[in-house]
Image (cartoon, rainbow, N blue to C red; front, side, top):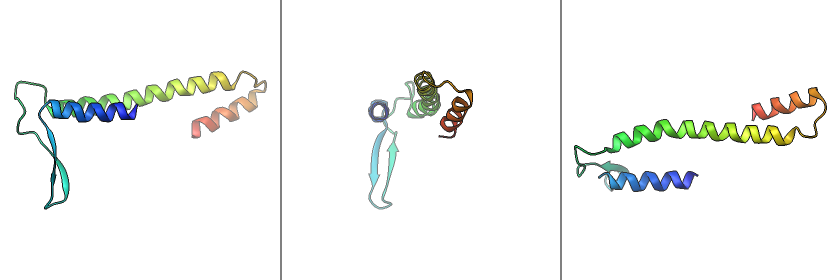
Length: 93
């Protein structure tokens, strides 16, 4: 999942006119967005969408994983105390 996001990030930033360049004097990377079209989707718009969508996607994945672990782990647990202790351990993790 992470690699898909990385490749989308790189591909779309290049597609929308922002090239990642390296400044050898200051020894840092920066995005040159001078070739972008003003009427089209901008790099800053893309970054705004990614910064909002990624945390939502991660939370959704964690909830799905938690439900799956909880559903499969408690099939054989009979004691309520043991179940509560396991839930607390999963929550702390």
